[in-house]
Length: 296
Image (tube, rainbow, N blue to C red; front, top):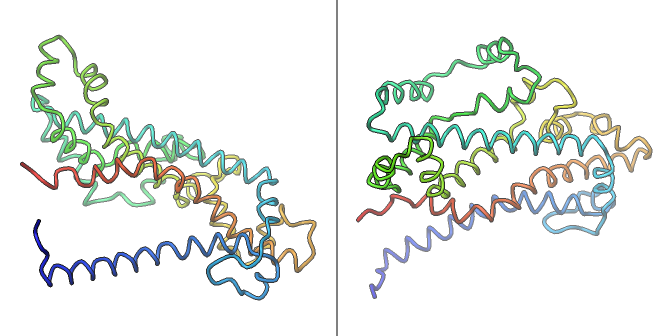
């Protein structure tokens, strides 16, 4: 067993300290939001919450879950996230597989074509005009179709397929009479669960947390996601007005207390689904990040 030198131990200690500080910086806002959402009225008024909940109160959670609009926004977020994730995985895996085929005539041209948007972007106004002209404005497809293919994710898929699936396997399938669609569905996809999980995580987190896209392309209340509603609540100078549907029956003090607490409740509710899903995908994420780091 190799004995670590003093320099190696110092590096390990510094790395642990830095990672620990980074973890604290990430965890503290989450714990604080949960504590504020659960603390009682006096703690909210006195601003006495520092880390753990001060008292216990679920009134704001009851108000949020009793509001039909919140459930509508939550459903919209789930539907948009699921569709965007499915389409993104299909698009990026398909393109990644195409780019691995050496017999594809336009391989170099296609690679150059998809790399251009990584350097140059059309910008918001041309994109908005394109969405309008295609008839996608005020539909969920305005959020899903533009993200059907991501250059970076497609390159990740291509690299994974090239480094994981031996070319002999695909050539054997071709000799057995399989076409590209059959190879992709029956061979490539089953062997690429790791990269599929990573691409799904990237797409799901990006779509779930996005509020700017819905702000631009979804003016209808019926399509508004929870994140856009949360943005409106957090950025409103008069929180009682933004939350009037929830707090109309309360007096001024209760309105203020519940208005402040509801902000944190909405943060918890909008963040919890991704936090719950992430542990199930983490093993694939770590494996995908480490893939190819060691050769031989």
